[in-house]
Amino acid sequence: MEKARILMMPFASIYSLYVQKAEKKGRTKSEVNEIIFWLTGYDEPSLQQQMISGVDLETFFRQAPHINPNASLIKGVICGYRVEEIKDELMQKIRYLDKLIDELAKGKVMEKILRK
Image 1 (tube, rainbow, N blue to C red):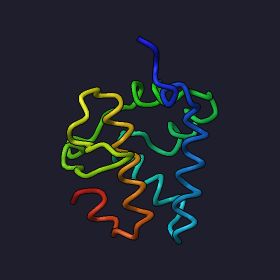
Image 2: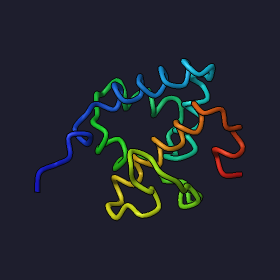
Image 3: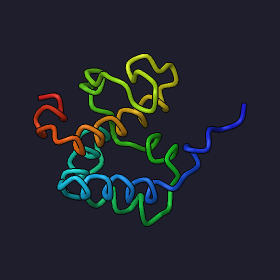
Image 4: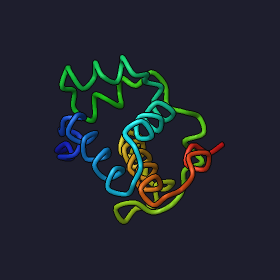
């Protein structure tokens, strides 16, 4: 089976798109980072290392220190799919992050985005 193109994209490229999307809507890079840290368990140094090393999106998620157990509380539609119904675990994690960044750009408060 052929790998989805998104899995081969450099995480740093995706990250910069997330930051652009957030900043266009008056949100900040630090908020994007907070979401990534919450979802994946990375911290500032390990996130920077992943971007410097040029890992692809698949590797970024496979090497994530831990996926937040509350990620299963993320519900809704992103890219035409209900995130809670995505069968492929890796693709679901990617779409979780997409959904959280989308919520940030739509002005949701951080407490709700991080499912507190």
